Length: 51
Image (cartoon, rainbow, N blue to C red; front, side, top):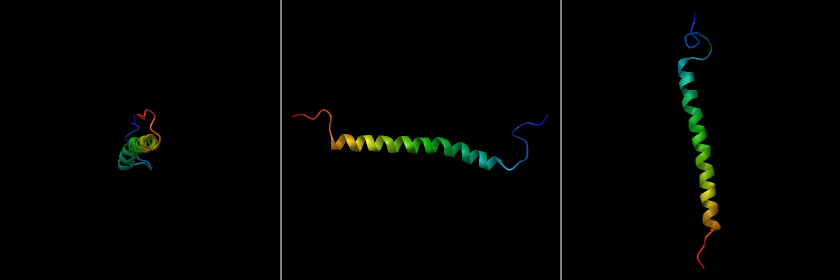
């Protein structure tokens, strides 16, 4: 019985490692950019500004 991880093909262990690291990193970057835009918009138009 061959394991899926041990089959020799076009995808090597280094490629799997890079992909496994790149996917969460990409999600984190998208989340950080969205939060940055939200904070920038809050600074321009404060919701609870004291009068």
